[in-house]
Image (cartoon, rainbow, N blue to C red; front, side):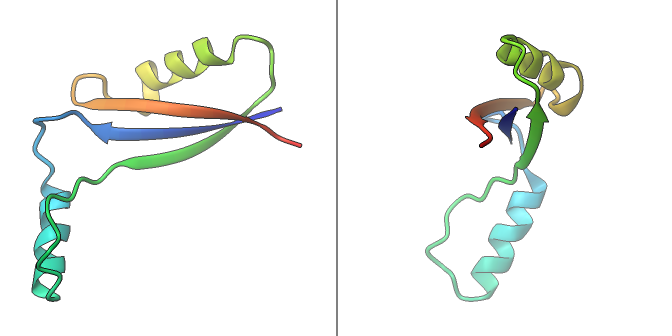
Length: 81
């Protein structure tokens, strides 16, 4: 069994209104040194190791988990003990 940790972020240049709202709120709380804030998604997927995990994860992200037009994704694979 493998644990896949998937990170999805907006592509560079894509506006992030949620990140802007968080940045504004942090500034209003006197965290003036906070620069740009970008919001993303994180998920964990447990998969049986069939020797084809990378291909499966790429396909899952491209078909459902990420919007390839505006989002990038990366992932790590860990063995579950």
